Length: 366
Image 1 (cartoon, helix red, strand yellow):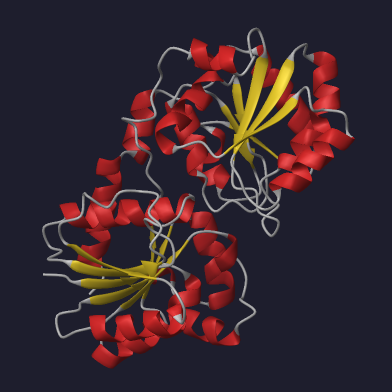
Image 2: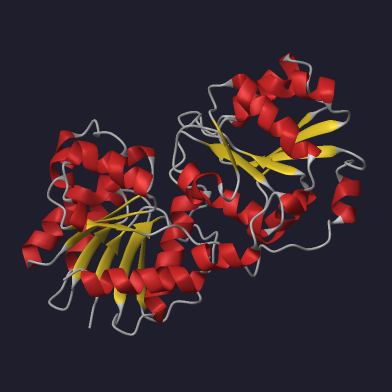
């Protein structure tokens, strides 16, 4: 029976793709009969997502003054005789995870997602331990190959575990007319981006769509660009929109709670997030699951999430004309003609599929 120790930053305390992946990973462990139980250490007591589904997992949330020291002490006390693996859910946790795994002579597993693993870290110690891991779990082959190129890790040590989408929450339903009315979007053509707006992560492509809006609005009457999400870069983007005189056609809606997010995908005619630093992009799948077509990027992990163009249109975000043409073409077609069969989404990204892959990985890493 397996008893992994998982070291993480974001799980139930945060929003975003990595936190969701970690929650889904824990939920999969709950369903695998060869996993007896597990310890999960993560930061902060804030709770954005419920952990009520856990029965095997023992949680340790670290916060307050000296939290780095508290985290270290908790990890040392959590590693025990029955521990089977140490899993670093972020590359920055590798030094601690390595020391713990070696102290017990058990396998070290690293989970990688996106840009943080595409090139060597500024921390040489982290780079050193990246070459010493026993196994790597990557959400895309794109990220795996970028990581392999600089770390030199053996291909046989890498497992690909794509994200999963909640297909019960995100599914086609009638367009929420009350929401359209409250937002004043009657008879509007709507393009949508759902993303975190961070000043150190300006790779989502939001600036590029804003820059295109004057040209797009000249060709599509009553076009509106909705941006859902929050972050420290949001004030800059709002100022940019005001400076360009686009306040009537670009709207920032802030953070939307998870249960309500599906309605925003449904009211949109097109989801667009063509950047260059996405590790995977669960929002593409959530949009597709709600019946709204998507445009992603050729330059990052979103191309793999969209099955290299089978599930959505891929563009080069650096090619302004290509992005513009893709948006205009998609908006000229019916939504239903542009989305994959739901069976394809289920076969690729259902929770059952995700759990099956986690089970296979745990049966393979010994």
